[in-house]
Image (cartoon, rainbow, N blue to C red; front, side, top):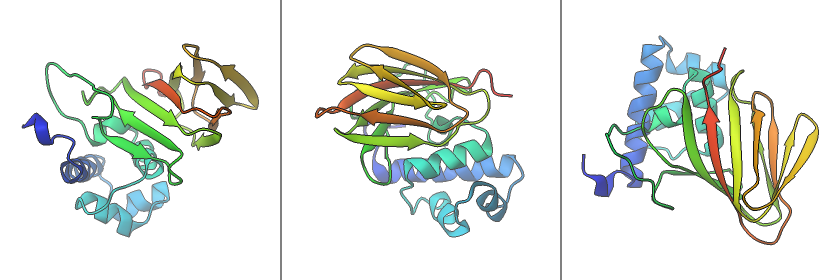
Length: 192
């Protein structure tokens, strides 16, 4: 596969659609069954499967959680050596565009996945709960960050890290006037 067009938006959309269709079929789910299970319309799922839609981060998380697979399995590429360059990976936006995550490696790992995250100044992003047993590791690469987990708020500065069980809603807050750049590792090793 030509690495020059791996991340072309059309190629990514088609790859996500193909992977979604394959994963859904392997699990014996109809489009309607998956749509009802995850709360995303049948029409939207159909468009994604055909490569005609550019789904938001929230929709992709719902699909991955509903299929019990890591998010990255929806757009993975097989290779022996992978390099992740800033702003060259697949990027997903929150619906309000205040939070962007960039997938770092497309290695089809079933145990973890890695992302760069960019949270706009004076903004927040509330993440839906991940499946039971999922653990997030977050490091602030630049800026500052507040993380709310189970009613507690944790303040992080540059190069600080946090690890928490992500199987309930959690929130990322950028309280500063500068972009918060983050590094995420999401572990699926303890999924029950």
